[in-house]
Image 1 (cartoon, rainbow, N blue to C red):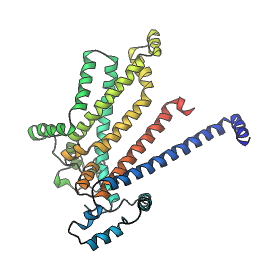
Image 2 (image 1 turned 120 degrees about the horizontal axis):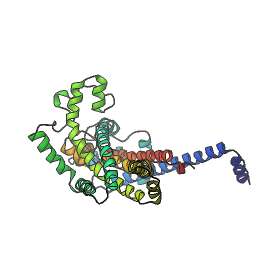
Image 3 (image 1 turned 135 degrees about the vertical axis):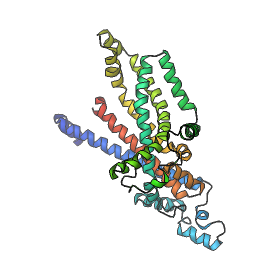
Image 4 (image 1 turned 90 degrees about the vertical axis):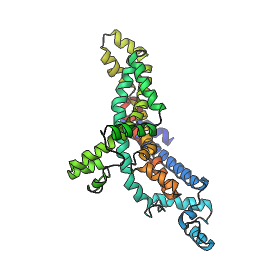
Length: 356
């Protein structure tokens, strides 16, 4: 009765009804994020129990006595019941404590804060390249369906999907660094520039501009241009393919035929009508592509000796440093959750129907 009365009152007040809907949406979103984060914590915790690596041996070494081994096991809380261990793990993560890396002897949270900006910088530039080139190419291919241009763009995308990125990286280094000397080699910057610019954001390109050191900036550009272009090519292949698919669906609809009958130019039909209606799904595609570059650039970082999150997790895995592996995995999962949330917010903004 009270609920029906509230709905009647809110129906007379559009602002109150709108505020109620937004409150329910915010609570639903917060609940979804909390549930997803809990599931992510559970998965990473179970990974530590499934992987055939003894975290105690990684700390004390395989020559430690049984007494030292048991003492370390107790200190790490591994002698407690599994539910208690999980509760402690959740508590520590919520407090920002991801454990201590046995490889670097530093807190994992500090290590990730140090290496993640390098991955973020590389993936961001790669995504920008993929979006700025992939979207127009996908639209162009759809508008010229079946033509030589369409076949060429599809072939370029197919190569980006099929050829292993580490092979492209090695070929790129051999051609553009060794043979032509157009770009700098592996690493983020030449060794004599390392540490010259004080870290502010962690992104070397931004930090060098903030410091006013153009020499370090251009040196960093010469190092990042090749790996970022390769990641951009990988992103371009995915984004152009999805853009073409979305556009073909829209161009076959009746309202496009109506727009052409009314005498609108082909540019207005393609960009003003068809492309406007694929922006929402395209945002999701771009967000997933960005997240994929953030967590999937391990091979690229390995080939180019890029000191990012991918290299950090790989080195930690080889060293049986499970705290670092799980911490990095948790950050990658949080990146996916954050980008999905961002795409949902943009979806609400761009699609009026979602705000009703």
